Length: 67
Image 1: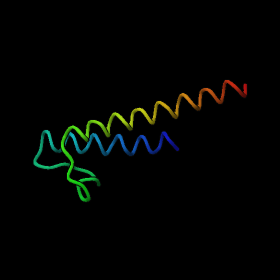
Image 2 (image 1 turned 90 degrees about the vertical axis):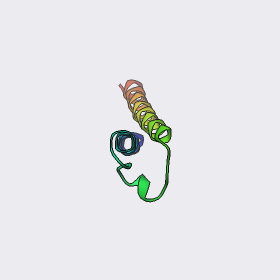
Image 3 (image 1 turned 90 degrees about the horizontal axis):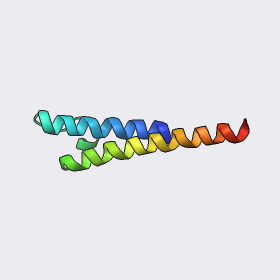
Image 4 (image 1 turned 180 degrees about the vertical axis):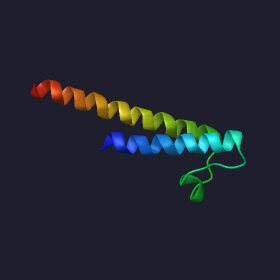
């Protein structure tokens, strides 16, 4: 579940950053509800990557404990 949420957060962060940096406004779902600066979209991207990594490391650890 962490990996899935991390992927969604990572995509929203990337879309917001790319939209604000190279085009006229941020893309994605978040700009409809919040007005965030560009740096926050980078932090969202990093948080998404961290969640994905955490989920994968935890999955690997559980596989090693079982097998």
